[in-house]
Each structure stands twice: as C-alpha cells, then as structure tokens.
Length: 88
Image (cartoon, rainbow, N blue to C red; front, side):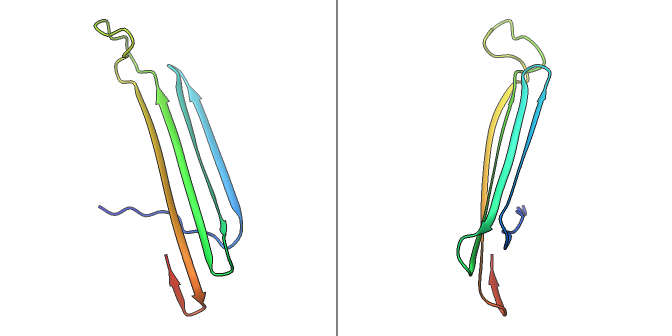
C-alpha cells in the first residue's frame, strides 16, 4: 500500500470542487496549502460524499440500497531548513 499526497507549496494556494447529481448525490472536496514559517509549509485536504442510493429498501425504509456517506482528511508538512535539506 502506497499513499501519496501532494506536497505543500511555498506560496498560498486553495481549491474547492463541488458536484451534485441524481439521487441526492453530493460531493465536495478542497484543499489549502502554503507557508507557515520561512522553513515550514503545510497542506490540508478534505472531502465529503453523500449518495442516497440507487433503490428503495422495502425492509428498512430509511436505508436505501447502495447509499453511502463518507468523510476524508489528509495533511502533509514540508520542512526545509536549508537549500540542501528537505523533509516531508
């Protein structure tokens, strides 16, 4: 398993994306990155997804088939105390 995140940036950046669809399909994700000090930068990302499902569950009316709700958060730091050394 390999998890790779985008590295923090030396300049301030931010982005957001929204998606809406049928069956109460809603997604939002975004990130913000930038310097915290002269040698330390950070990046934080997050997302949310909700989907009502593709079919009605007759046995449990409040629980549609295939529905989901998910949250995600990730963060990374970059420390560059000198031009010859960088730690992420």
